[in-house]
Length: 153
Length: 288
Image (cartoon, rainbow over all chains, first blue to last red):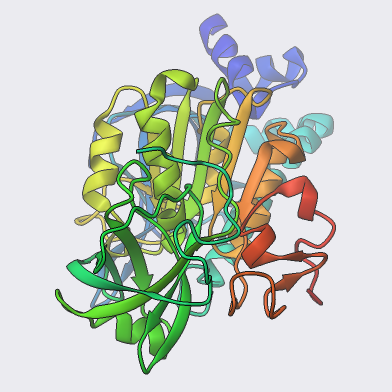
């Protein structure tokens, strides 16, 4: 557990988080490894986990009928994967697949939500961090909507 | 042969900057579905030294004239290289040229990337789409003088894997041990791409450079540059460490006609490369 706490406190996502909270959420975390090509979740799955990527690369994909899978984003070292665990109806909206051997810290969403209910200050800290991630992803999506490299650019 | 890296506001060879010199197309290479790289040779032998970041006015007789950045190696100015994307009538016609065809060239014009001044610093090159073309001479220069710089990173964004410029060269640069090359695309199919997917700004937090001793060279669509600058500022860069290449409709290329006026500057004469702090007040202004 001590090692897990160290890994969590060293991760940029948890930078500055009170060690008491690190200890709390460590109880909901475990180390996982995904092989290249392995699907981590599929669209429509229950959003029962989120991950902090330690190293490796994961692609988020959407399956479009007639076109097949389309990669819409890749996540790699130090990225956070998954925020639908925090928002009802707690369902995954994309497929996630490891592009290479990937090591991550996996969090049990039910456990984390329970800790947040018990300790609202922890909930606030976590949601502040997740809203930053959601904001960054939204901004990146909007940039791509602009098709900035198109002929009109 | 002496290579000058000073910005030139008048052509290196010709006295009359408005008179095009005839060049013959030696080679045409298709880069993407709508972008081609042309290698040109002057009909009358002449050395036209240029500095990385400068541009020429390329004249297709009877069709029109357009400003195009020079994308070749500054140490080999005898071969004039232009990468052209077919977006209007003139560039579309230029992209249809074949070996042996003739076109006119005026230039080189404009300011250049500060590759000499940046010696001793890390270099981060951030570009998207065809914005890689005006930066390629700077990359050639930095690689030819690699020992003079610290860490060098090239971050490149494209629409799809098929829209990447100079793909073989990117792969070769990536294979070098002294250069970080990260490429990202907006979308891709898993069976055709194993690299990054996302906007180019997402590569900046992971780029290897010392924010206090780095020079950033940025070229791409203006929206991309806006967000890139924000991300560089988050990494701790000052405005005077960031250089951008601006684009406006240029006509005379020597600051006479005023078509490319950009606040107090003319893009053709004072740019296209600007240190960001010198244009910050007008950058992103809707009216300008």
